[in-house]
Image (cartoon, rainbow, N blue to C red; front, side, top):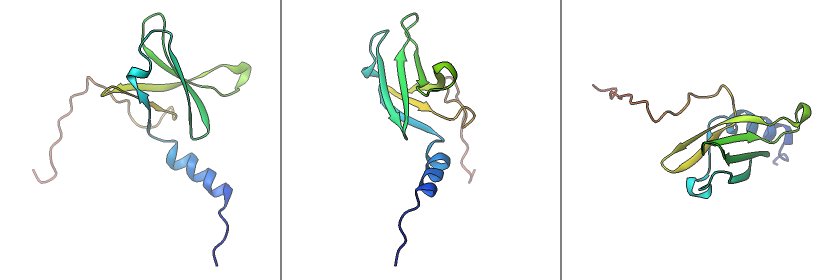
Length: 108
């Protein structure tokens, strides 16, 4: 006999395992012009990705109703023509295109 799924356990697993890390949002071509925006839901949290009208840079924000409805910035990067966001402020290092680390195999 199996037990029904536990909703609390599912929510805890989602919070720990799935919210950390980088999440693919869309292709960069989805936001071609300054002022364009895209709203997506990642694991139940609404996120807005927009191209800044002033300088054309991408920005991402959580759309949660925090004090006075202030949007919370989310880390956003572009790699290989794709937009990625990370919901955790302290999770993982930033992915930098300028970083040129060399990797040495373990057997060397």
